[in-house]
Image 1 (cartoon, helix red, strand yellow):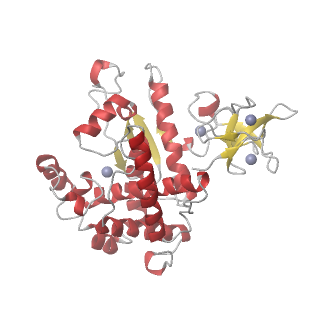
Image 2 (image 1 turned 30 degrees about the vertical axis):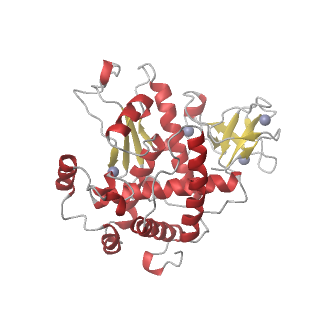
Image 3 (image 1 turned 90 degrees about the vertical axis):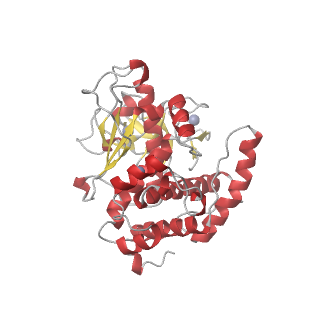
Length: 362
Ligand SMILES: [Zn+2]
Ligand SMILES: [Zn+2]
Ligand SMILES: [Zn+2]
Ligand SMILES: [Zn+2]
């Protein structure tokens, strides 16, 4: 993640809505692609505070009214109004029921994680979009709650509706329960997961999205060589077997997580999530410690892996110093590195518009 600078020269961070030094409101300017202080122009409209940009801006409806976003829209057409949504909020199909106490805060947590996901996709130059953008599958998000959440604190959405966090033809659904620290930590421990985070869910589900966009009917042979046959056993057979028998004892020798052993699609999504996490860590290092930074969109794959592992050694010790769980708990064994490399190649090809066979970005 990059750091940004206010017109008063104070540092701004990606989640900020206000500069703590000059009290200016802060927003993402899509014209210059940065977080800036927002200035009031003489005619009362908002203006990007970056001197070389000064674009006229309107706050996203979810920023101005709902307080869950911090992005703006360029005010260059009559179509932009106070109900307009920004480039990231336009993908929301279902938002939480805001008449339920606490749901605005839960939604805010989801939006914060979603913005980090989309920032990563943008920084990698990956395609995503809606049908009208000419992109298939069309991306959308549903943020919903179960009707039977413990304590009956959720307002019913339908008769006994159970919400499954998952991906289905471009629609990513996240159960609101995942925004509750206590519930999420309970699930993490009961599933034996190293980490369970909101942004991690987004990264996993977008992996399924890219499988459908970039691999299905395109790179399936190459996929099967690395991840295995996804048709035998079928997904539902594999699911049943996993919940009955659990992962194989020695799963660490071939997989990034226990859940990745369930089926090649889950292996891909888990590895994809790890790839995006790695990119995000390297990008953050690049913008904060120039001596260890590399650009994940330009670097050779093995340079990325080595840099990530070196950072891991240091950052794990930092976390241990604070009594926190390791920042990078996983061991990247050769089979997992092969899978990450496949994802790196697929994404590099998608970025350049080439097919995997003709891509040089290895
Ligand atoms: Zn400022
Ligand atoms: Zn700007
Ligand atoms: Zn927005
Ligand atoms: Zn999955």
